[in-house]
Image 1 (cartoon, rainbow, N blue to C red):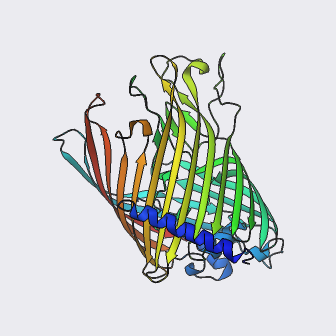
Image 2: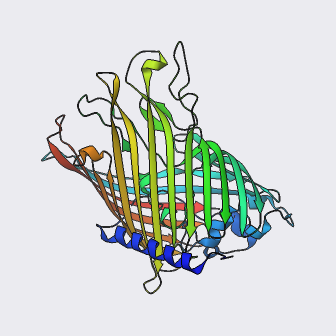
Image 3: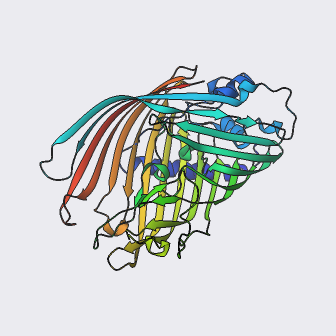
Length: 451
């Protein structure tokens, strides 16, 4: 399956290792949580253990990544009729519980620390009609539910796959996971957030004050169309997406579409789409790779006006995000080194003058080291640094150091423990010159049962 030249492979391996080493050594190291696990319905269908697709759950190895990229079938099964169907191979469910303890201290000098501890059922997911349905068609759907009774369709798509086990084309439509990375851009063992999903990039206007709407550019799921091509170890994807919906200055990537016209006005981006491009190159079967992503979007953001005219209620932010990730395993130490960098550009809005302000650039990077104790147990450490506004680099910078342990029992039951120390440089009052550092230390134990 590896038809690419040895010279190209060696060059890219060196690049990935250097980038990952740079990210690890440039500062401290690591993240937070988001629950994920292996898909037991596929293990039932093919009679495989967790280690077939994962080095440590939920991180995918090359076999697991190509299985997903081929529409949840073996690549050599594309276009081939399945021998039999079992309804249990297309359904799965997950329940999540959590124990959290946190301590927060505001930026103002002398602020007391506020501690909180709680145990909670944090919701779950139902995966229905999930997998390869015909020789060329696959579906993916996840319905999430929470303790407040709300239901959310996280993903719901259908895809067509055609080609050979060495190269194939895919076309998906529906509510999609917009970025399915490998290695450094894949999910962390702790479900740790990457720059593209862990932190909102804010739109600031310090001179005029007021609302500061936030969003992320390369994250989650969105309504759209995805075209992809896998050839050897390389993958390229292009997507046309509906974009993000905003209400009261707050975003929701889970709700498709943008504000629509009412009365005499029309939201600026009501007839526009977002665009996403991403690519992976697999260097090693156990997590070594290079990934890149680019997002070009249009966000209609609330101006804070009380007017019912859409022209007055929203202003248009044409934003962009690009990111590059690298990872490479160190065989002797059995450590996977990962690193990534993201840069963003946004328009801004002056609330008092009701006009556009200067463009804002943002950036973030992370370095991570993961160690597989066994194929079911993983430990790691990570450092994240995010600068929401590079023109005000001393304000609202976010730095997070996290350590975590994942323990998977191999039967759908898993425990993940993490401890994260977060510091945010922020104004201690309405004056920009009075800066302090807000601290938040949090321990979390996540319990997940997946069947």
